[in-house]
Amino acid sequence: MQGSWLGYGAGWILATLILVLMIALPLMLAVAMIIYADRKIWAAMALRRGPNVVGPFGLLQSFADGLKVYLKETIIPSSANRGLFLIAPILTFTVALVGWAVVPFGPGMVLADINVGMLYLLAISSLGVYGVIIAGWASNSKYPFYSALRAAAQMVSYEVSVGFVLITVILWADSFNLSDIIAAQRGHVLGFLNGFGFNPLLFPMSVIFLISAMAETARAPFDLTEAESELVAGYQTEYSSMSFALFWLGEYGNVLLMCGMTAVLFWGGWLPPFEWAPLYYIPGIFWFFGKILFFFFVFSWVKATVPRFRYDQLMRLGWKIFLPFSLIWVFLVSGYLEIFRYGALG
Image (cartoon, rainbow, N blue to C red; front, side, top):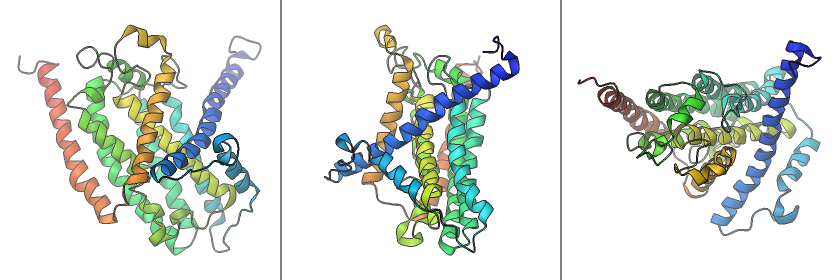
């Protein structure tokens, strides 16, 4: 398009806009379908049927729910800060979308293949807390405000351990670029297994990252920001209609992003699990989506089976277990690489 009559500037803008829509529109459709899948998984584990009326097998239930919230009235409390109250759900939903800009779906299939993709994702994931804090503050209500304080403490606590986990991956891959990190995982273990997660030194880090991702996205058993027994609906209490739906979409968008990051950082991204030539006939994007769906199933499985933590347990896990463990592991991984890769003892 840059070589067409549009010229370089307009052609680049149009091409980028098309690529953005090619990611954003399927992602929003995927969010609708994984909400359905989430409810089906919970139902199966509780020996219930789940959505089964709207459309074949209940597949259109999420779209019916979306139409319902769209037709409802948006109610803004009279004492709320109107501007911030409306900005909060938009911010939450936007942050969930923009993180996908640097995620590679396959070889060369990435919107922005930047050299600091890891830092970009770390920065974007840390912005998610602002939507929750602004919603809690702007609602001018006791329970949303308590929820916002919980969310701030929770997300900051687990971001620290996530940062140390990412350091170990960066050290081993020797790059901040996500495509390079995936390439470094090819034949990583015994020349046959693709993925840092198969490495005994990095497997504990993959477990910490997955659990921390659940805490970062406020999923059960870490959903203390939405604890209905204490905080009604938490920061969403005063929201209705599409503003509530944007929080819902943002939460599931973040869950999908964290599942994708788990696949990219530890389980080979678009690579098949085994370094076997026939497996490469399957396009890499299918392997990547399959891994995302598997980790989303793990998220749903945990939510359906594990009771909610108390807040002191949540903080203890983050600060007294994950933080020191991940910090020690950074020393172990860096020491191992210094000795065996760079020959420090030679």
